[in-house]
Image 1 (cartoon, rainbow, N blue to C red):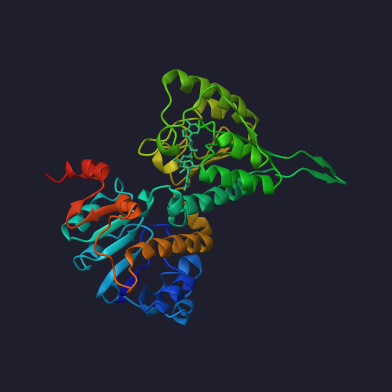
Image 2: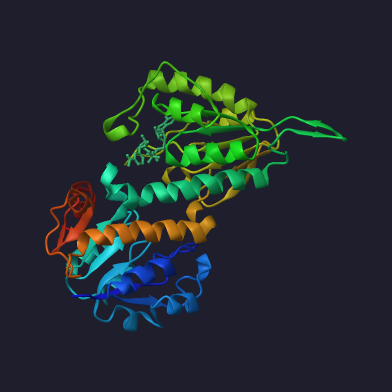
Length: 380
Ligand SMILES: NC(=O)c1ccc[n+]([C@@H]2O[C@H](COP(=O)([O-])OP(=O)(O)OC[C@H]3O[C@@H](n4cnc5c(N)ncnc54)[C@H](O)[C@@H]3O)[C@@H](O)[C@H]2O)c1
């Protein structure tokens, strides 16, 4: 039996994305579901209410009407505790959950017996690629980082041969060549820059080179579990710092994306290294929220130190909210297909590998073990 799917306007500061776009509304309404969207929910991403109405959604004002009888809530950020209080027991919320930053929401969903799926926990297996919101949003973030860096850089990125002389191309250094880093490389190459990149996973080298960038190699290969990086030993860290410092001094724009799941971001650029950089150069630190890859990064701020602009964005995908929302909404549409059966009803068990892995809260329990360990100490 079809049901009501509610999409609230995101409340978090600076969040311009929306969890559904008109194209996805059309697909879901065609399957018989009622899509209810809060008025203005798409405004930050430039999807006006009338486009949602035309696609078949019901645009409502106020959370009370939005959540009434809703079986599923689609969101970008986790719902706030007062929103959770308006959800019926057994309703399902799907979005990024970020439990270490939103413990109250996770605990409240537990108390209210709301089921929560965390998109950041979707396993990175081939079958789940179309619902991999971490990747789609990292793609948006990597693109936005290069554009932001270029906008703050006082140089052209491409080589120019003009009547007023020849301009050398800018050098862009990318530290961390995962999904965001590779997109940042591709964008910088399209803008004509010389690009160098480094990652502790040697496997990234081939991808970096295939994008036309130079891969900086160390003897280290720190590929850990599931294709993610492991933490480096003290000796490896020292080697890395030395090589990175030399590359940093050459660069006009540096984009750092290095992350280790569940840990503070590794420091790749120290205060001392920043002092060796050319004045006017720019660092865009994508790891700002998890501590920063540069020692001088301040999350959410742009600071200038020794003539170097250091940008610490906290939500870069929101800078390209239109397309970031489109990709995110498609990820959600694919994920939803796993919890809806042939009759259009919600499935009652979540044994599918993707559902089981991303199940954060269910039937009054935190199902994701690391989150349970992190939060439940505080509850007893
Ligand atoms: N469906 C799939 O199969 C799928 C989808 C997306 C990503 N992946 C893989 O998952 C892995 C992680 O991707 P991600 O973008 O989410 O990574 P991430 O955001 O966890 O980290 C970003 C990058 O930082 C690198 N890094 C960590 N410590 C570093 C250090 N000290 N110095 C330099 N670089 C450092 C990591 O190796 C990674 O490439 C990659 O192997 C990627 O190809 C697979």
